Image (cartoon, rainbow, N blue to C red; front, side, top):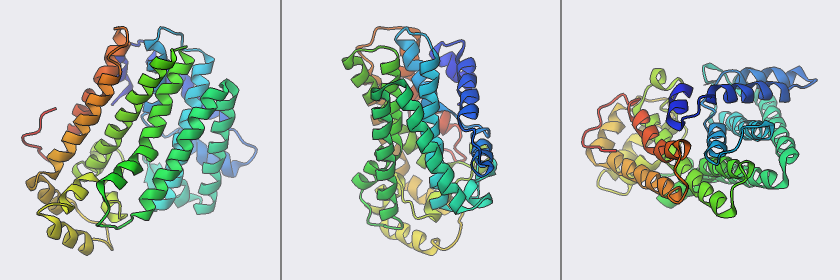
Length: 338
């Protein structure tokens, strides 16, 4: 989704101004005496990205009627640093050649440099968070632990056709939902929310994070490089078997799916064959149902908040984002309602 769409959804006229403040602050924070760190870090950070997690923080603060001040921007910078560091490390593991239209650090500068830059950004995130409060630092530290745990679980299940759905859900909870949860809780902290409000915001962020990753994994099967602005079809190639595949592997199409995964393990593949199987056996539809479950959980978490434009936008975000994502599908999805 574009920034103007999110600005309209949340009713925050200055959202693009705030995201630009985050971008500028990021560029300053990553300055280093070492060009081997600064140049590749700047290349990745300046290449764009949704900045959705920091936008969540800004929206939460606004929903509580508080000003977007320097502490909010610094918190957003810390969140974006952690997210960017995790992408750098993911690219190493996935042997990715590009990210947001530019060469990955591991592809251009090498794996050793990529590890160091990722670690450097994690460290910077901790410094930024600690400058706000121990509570903000604690939220981000917990998210960092979740990221590592989730990635470890994913690696342990590489190419595992017996991977359980629960194992997959635990993986994406750590890799994605924990940082989304932290972004919303930090917004609650910066916005002087009550403990009850902060807990509710955390549940919203956690559920939306689960939905977000399920959608991202679905689009890796259904969308195209052009529509997504990044390479798709990598999950199967890298042995990451996501929910649609796992649902199918537990049903009547299991033998067909296993045969496909085995025959396509060694090289990149077109997804048309497997998508046809997943469409016909209902695995795609079941995945969308699971997404809708998390979306409902997210929306219900905000039910007790005082109504205002931003709260309404946050409540609508999960469904709006799903509609936007399905518009990026390169195949027709019949009989699927949002």
